Image (cartoon, rainbow, N blue to C red; front, side, top):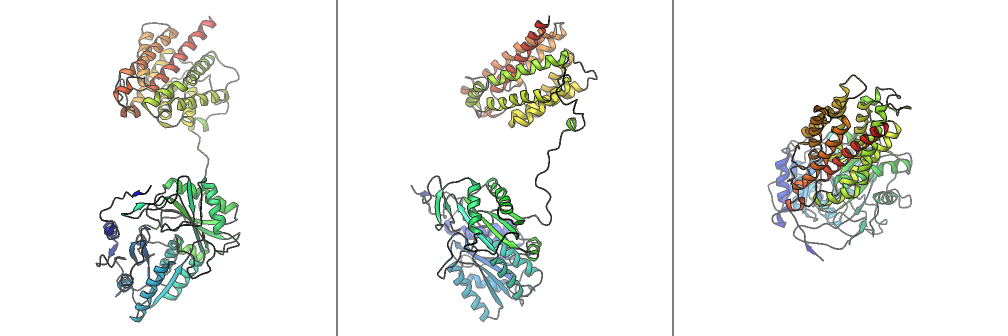
Length: 595
């Protein structure tokens, strides 16, 4: 079913002129000619035809491909950009106005994408400008590799590879080369680049209905930048498969679109078509580079990833590959003030992947101190029992926690806690230094940080690190019940400080704060540590249950209605109460068996 496309615009007929107005307000180095709506030309503010002493480089075409072409106007790139209406070639008068505005005695190079309207209008403007005494050269860019080699006069379409040609020509002009030399470098660059696009949706023109030509679960290979049909419609595939198909098409030896063979140096451009998230573009880039290196034997010298030549709100991307030599790389690396040219890497790049640095506790301590002891001390055995009971209680609660969290959060509390608990169990068997309580608590924090993720992972890591710091201040290896209570108190204070919650906020602290208070109270009253621990665990359970009556003031629960909150306790508090009580009961049972 077709429906009206949603756009943040005013009158659809004014989108190009209003875009240009916003562009020059944003970038003071740019100006536009006062000829709206017929003449829509963006120029460098420092380039006047009467005084400009370098070759002017002009490009343009239909609008809707922003930032192309006006976003590439600037010193070291385009001198002017001629803007047509959306997907419509600019008029001859508009092109002529641009030539007259910026062309000096060195002449002007027109870079034109290979579309019939652009070729005709820029061609006629070039002839008229020559008749007025201007020196004009033209380079036609047709970098499309999606369709079979043409037999007629249309030729290959001009796509995102045109932006690379802009940069080469602009840098050559900025270096003071003659018109013939600038045109020669641009022509050679245009012959070295191939592009192919893949679309997940068709674009919607301002004021028009959205096309439903490309159905759900489908993608179009070789879709044009004006929404024209591509080479084929196919089922949506993982990006690995898509990238492989596109590279095989561009680098095909049968079609010989680009003169690239094994051992060559290349430049890569991953171009978003307008509605593709940066995340997906970077994934495509990350998959393309190693394929070029390993499967095609190419040296990838530069990578540019972003949205350079779009098709309004089309979802998808194109890949451009350009054969490079040292001169071309120098042109691409040359400085430019064009606002939308990317900051690309140049020269030797360091390795993209380096080892994760070890925390000081790991890197400065011996292997023996950070491995499971061959013989556990009495304290080590008690610590092992407590940890094992605590994490198993969390593992057993996974489904209940997820169920509660699905009502008041994002439904993954149990799964998140489960990942942390299983990581602790695995790591404890391998390297927890159980005879050293402080270091063991520190390692629990590291396990949690690595495995859990999300807010819970961070909070529990803070909890453990604060407890570790408090325990580490004790010079003796044996930890007393009072010192454990002080460590718990310090851990709660740290979570409250950095997490922003306190008692009554409906969080895990509503279980731990009552537990800490009772533990401290019972130890001060002279209770034996096991009894105090168990009594404090009862306070933790009661505190967790009481969260049903609390209004959430932190986390995702704070967005949930009070009526829903009243039906379930806070999952984080229930998890905290569960592991705390399980540890307390396990320690009590251990002491009872020993006696």
